[in-house]
Amino acid sequence: MSSAITINIVTPRGVLAQTDAGYVTAPGELGEFQVLPGHLPMLVAIKPGVLTLGSTGGIVVAARYAVGSGYLRINETGTIEVLVEEAVHGSNVDVATARAELAAADAEIAKLQGAPLDGDWHVLQIRRAWAQAQLDAVSN
Image (cartoon, rainbow, N blue to C red):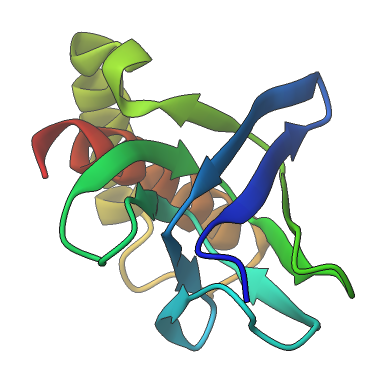
């Protein structure tokens, strides 16, 4: 069994990263999960959060990416494809813009308190989660 996993992070704009790692930790819709080399094929929905790529041994973090909603797929060869609406490497996050987006989303969500939870509320929740994911990718 190989000690590395090949990972491709893909957005609608194209491939953001193609790299190898010892493990991947992802923000699943049902909770954070980790994938190690040799994992069985699967398809999992992911939510906005931090995708962590680590070195073999599971201790050292090699890279952190803020990712939006999408899917993580492990194919038959063990390659991982992360197909997301948006993604950015933690070192490329514009912290000031992310903080402003988070504050704006929080303010708009506060205005909707008590209103029926409709599509606008869900869009704001996704915007807020994306802004928070960017900040988390930088700060952790």
